[in-house]
Length: 186
Image 1 (cartoon, rainbow, N blue to C red):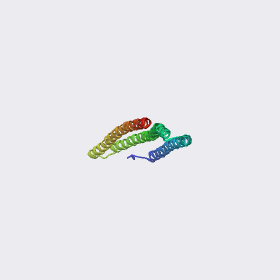
Image 2 (image 1 turned 90 degrees about the vertical axis):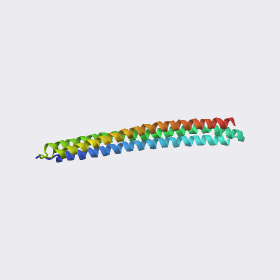
Image 3 (image 1 turned 180 degrees about the vertical axis):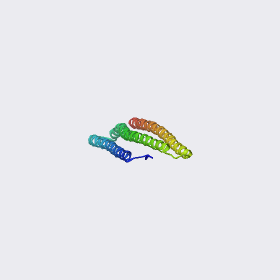
Image 4 (image 1 turned 60 degrees about the vertical axis):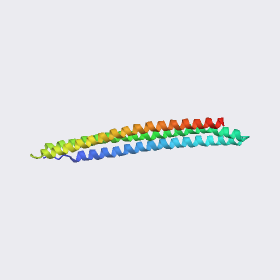
């Protein structure tokens, strides 16, 4: 009788798991690097804009000019916040997509290994164990179907969240623009 899972297979599986872990860690660090870069860029830009705005405020001569200046700063600030949010979302979504891709590949490989293990066990199963083998195969198929259903639902939820995020960002920018126009008119 042959063993369904030998030492070489076990070592190969462990090696693949470690490689996957290091790959995921590298993807996570890439995401963190992008976030740090984005935040440093925003901090530099914000500092320069604050200095510029402070100079503009200090040169204001009356309240009407101050109100006009504030109104003029509202729309660009809302647009920059929306752009930052979009960029942040893109980084997080991109990193999540990479991790999901690796997880899906790892899961698919794991499913293949389980099916190979079940097939090997079936070949070596004693006579009369057909019902137990059918039960195991059925359980593996059910788990695979459940995963597919959850994956589809998660993908749909992600797409809906992206659409809602985009709509919400656009609405916020438009509202800030309307508010800025209202202040300028006043």
